[in-house]
Length: 422
Image 1 (spheres, rainbow, N blue to C red):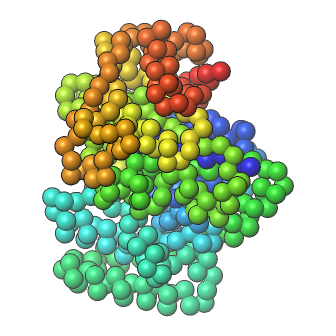
Image 2 (image 1 turned 120 degrees about the vertical axis):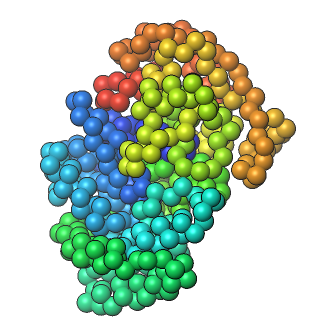
Image 3 (image 1 turned 90 degrees about the vertical axis):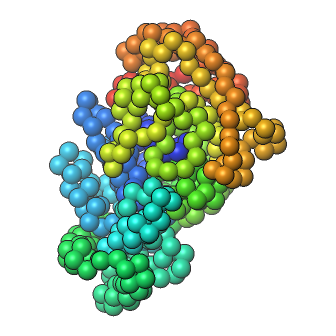
């Protein structure tokens, strides 16, 4: 049995905390796409932990954590993350498994990312410069290297062949790469060797065996549904499929094994980098949400753009992934506002096409509904009936609009600041 957990907005919804919170009910937590551009923040007993590639169940005993074939891995960054997580007290060596089919981010991929963004000038995508896109390009171009290739006696020849292709691109961009490449290469080969000391598996067989044995698997997504390569706000998207279907190809799962899809969304919206954001607030309220919500990238530290909840986009994401239940995050950030808005629709869009094909090329005007705010500090509350009536009305409206129940409400970053709604 497999349950899928994914974000329904532009990422940064709080998937790490919820995966950590739900892990005691599962035997395996598996990442199925993305790379070290994804920062999943967990706060345990007042201490913050940021995971980039390691699944969010790593701090739980008796839980297997699998990095699936759909993930792209930077050995240098993963090694540093492993060492940091071990220092924080997690038994990573016994709990972490890595798919042999996961693709490797080469040092030159990171430099290609930088060269490409520089060449775009004002039209840049807003990449995290972690080499994600160039790695996925090589994967689809059938010229990438995988974790399992490190066992080949010809591994360095394979690396050199891939690098030669990248060097031709550097020359095209007139990009000065040599000094930084030389610096990274020795670290990279050392890190590849370091990762060979961890459990590397044929993950599709590995997962199938656990499912056959009746084990429970949580497939953990990265980024957000609105950044999906096919269905997000293209071209301002990530390089993988972030919706529930991505779990099948990113882990080697048959669709019949998926039991439930849980979608996470913030009580408001945020976005990092370039791209359309219809409900964005470039005013005092937007700054209030950014400051109170600590809306800065867990991996990059970049300030996030903030805005009101966008229901057309949220319902679109729910439809794409067949979401069965919702989890609302960061509701506590809205405390202190006199009124709260949520976009119900976009002007000029029909019911049949609630989200335009090319939203970044369209002037989209949201149609808002206003709700009464609340002044109480809900972060200290632990029962649903303790929450202010105005907030419960906000939740009820969201459930009716989305036709999906909200099962969990997060009112702070710690595990304990989580209310389960019956």
